[in-house]
Image 1 (cartoon, rainbow, N blue to C red):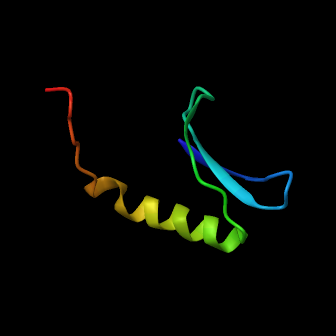
Image 2 (tube, rainbow, N blue to C red):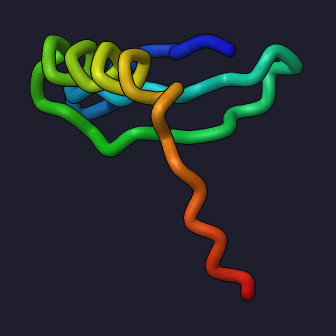
Length: 58
């Protein structure tokens, strides 16, 4: 998986989480500053291993 950071048409930033097969798995909100998008990516990378599953199908 990889994070792909893009600049939007209104000069803001967003990122996609892309699977190894090229499919976009998640898209972020938009950020006014690139540093904010990068900070969020860093936070996700640190915490993803501790993520829990909230199965609300039952």
